[in-house]
Length: 174
Image 1 (tube, rainbow, N blue to C red):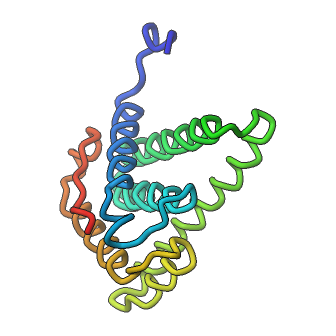
Image 2: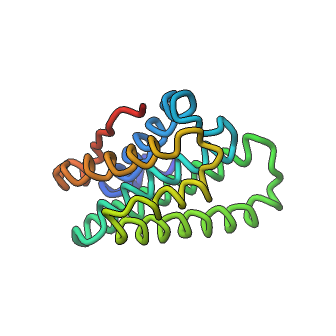
């Protein structure tokens, strides 16, 4: 913070923070918890935050070095958000590092899982199975699967320059 007055953050870092903030805001949409039945718990929220960040990372993949930098900055902001959340709920300094390693591994597992289910499209069964393994107990896994596909299409339709500037829109949840 203090040093940012002398060393302002890079445009990629600014864009990444904005993309993360938008993903976090979308993950808080009440429809996920009411209509779709995602558990309003630490685990449920982690899954939705991770899902939205993973969708952004997936969208930026293959769009060049600037997109790779913004994608990394988005992930870095996500990790900082998780770290802050752990500290806020009272996890001690000595345990934060271990928990962060586990959460980062879980994120990469979710990202790999999404890659696999997207490769299997148009078959939605692998996506629904992924939801059952990770986001359960969502009372309407099919609606969540439909949302994920809609969000992916919605992101694909957004011009990469807007994303690189940190601007993203999401479809309505529910």
